[in-house]
Length: 398
Image 1 (cartoon, rainbow, N blue to C red):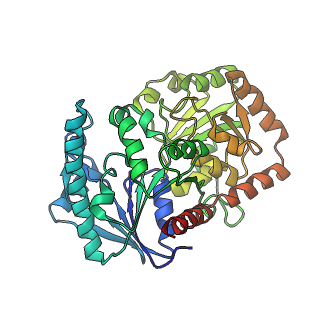
Image 2: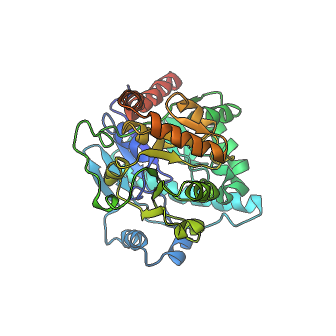
Image 3: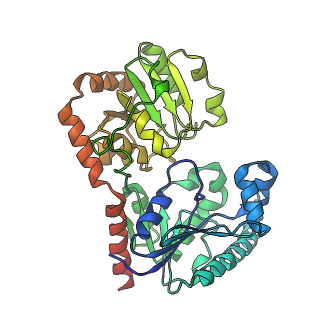
């Protein structure tokens, strides 16, 4: 175990994100035995133009003006830092050399802020942990000069439109530059090892204390009382890049006596989909993380209706561990990453498989199966995942 170190975490996602975050969970696990500084992504001019009335943007502008502190202590050994800079939004630039010049400038300004916070807290000989940030992580090893630079690859960002143009070229460069690459998927570890042999799969964890109705009473929310069983439910971001809207429509049409409950923020495609016109489909919106187990408890079957594509195929869905921790039967699209869960879930290749497997899950669910699901979820903890990271850090340092 790594103890007594100073660790800087560059978060691709901000600390105040509404959904669950691997990087936040890892930072909190790091902070049990080390001092940790979590770096929020800097504000961009594009974000100001697009969301100037957003509470988060307003807060960050106040921090930049000095009206609010830029360093917040969250736990005894964990601080969150809001950089007091606004960087250029440059991803639209087609010219590679110009993008690289401007990206290096952004990196340099960002690193200057990080070093300022590092000095303020007296951090020395730091471990630098980059959460999948391709662009703003590219030159950090040079500017921060850490004892070891770790790249955490948890999502196939280079197949998203935003990252694809420059990410296809830059991510391999970043992987080569890193001293250690850790991933949450065997497919991502295979990809990273092409550029850096010091690349390993470390899985990921689940907050068992939150998703555990055996240690505390979890009550079903009142708004679920008017929804008849069986309830087929999904919790997570509702985005057409990852989820198969046509599949959800197919299930709702073919099984009108099943009620489909969708919990999470919607993208524009979901908001305008035919699902909103279906009587047996319920959109309940985004919920605070601590309320999710209460909704999950009401599900008869939990689903992960992913599209199978380059974005999803290697992606480790954290919701699967959460579903398992509550003992729920799960029907999910048969992605490469889901092979990891094949002994504890029902995996579907075709639309008709979803109908057959959901029906099967409803009929054969029992206490013994629920116990097995909970047991496997308990082994997928953030402590175990971070201990693997510690092991590879020690091996790399030695």
